[in-house]
Image 1: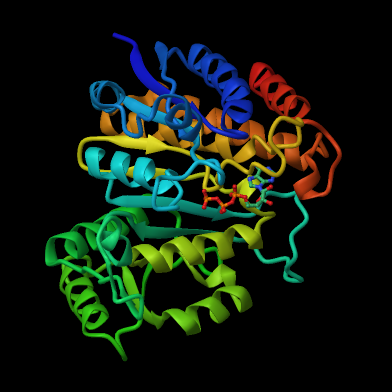
Image 2 (image 1 turned 45 degrees about the vertical axis):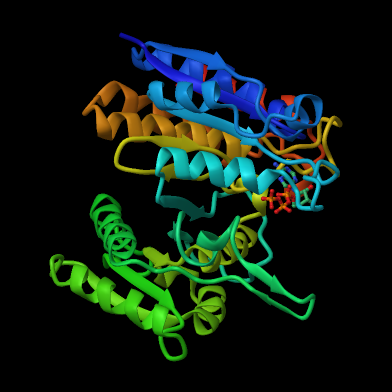
Length: 362
Ligand code: ATP
């Protein structure tokens, strides 16, 4: 039986980075001996503007019926609901909630050949693990404004949510090679436990889970300190787990270390479903001009194969995932074409073709 992938190209640069990624995924799959088929859906802010439909139930149901979901990007700044709020979060949060994908895995990895703003040459290879459904984002769709004077959104941290994201962090560290500095497996809990009860609770539950993983070292950092320490010594991190909003912010910071959002893939994973998308949004400022860096999307497809391989204990799927990442690494290290965001002048298509060539030759 082929793996069936629900494909949501979405808005802005989403379709531009999705199209070549599907070609690359198909070639990688066929070379690794994996059968794969794609079901593409119209879904996004553009569709909402044209039809008034935000979260199409048939599409959500098909995402659940598929083996994995590949998403390009959602959102157009001009497309808003009657109260002036962008439609994007309604769709993104709705999809995340429907699929119960509680763990956003955001690898921060430096590839040889890509210039970064950091002066250090240290190897950078860590994961920001963002709790994807609770925290401050749990308030999405709620919140209150009182008399046009006071506005509130409530942070929600639950034992169940914290337990499962912490467990995910340790399981993820087990699969990795430790931090680049010295190979030590380390899970860093990033919080603000010195100020807020909710974060003190997050830390307490994290520590309880940590006790089940005595072979993996732990650390605690306040989010403000973490944003400085990560910049100073990125090689000292393996897996850093945190609340939703903190993960949203620190994963963009981390992306900045390794060349920007065009280099930052992600996998949003739950106990049943997996949704893979670049960390970036629809980048309307560059859409339609062939400027989008497709690497984050391509690497996200690689993560999808790795995850399928894990879930189905399928070595061939894992091989397809490794082949995609190796091809990207080889292309970049070999001085291959790069888009403007990482200092080159190549088009989306040029970059994708070079990756495709590396896979074909592997
Ligand atoms: P969202 O909140 O939906 O994630 P955002 O507001 O963070 O979106 P993005 O759409 O990710 O915004 O874009 C932020 C900046 O990064 C823009 O200037 C955009 O052009 C640039 N950017 C994002 N993705 C890419 C990419 N793949 N290639 C090149 N530049 C990109």
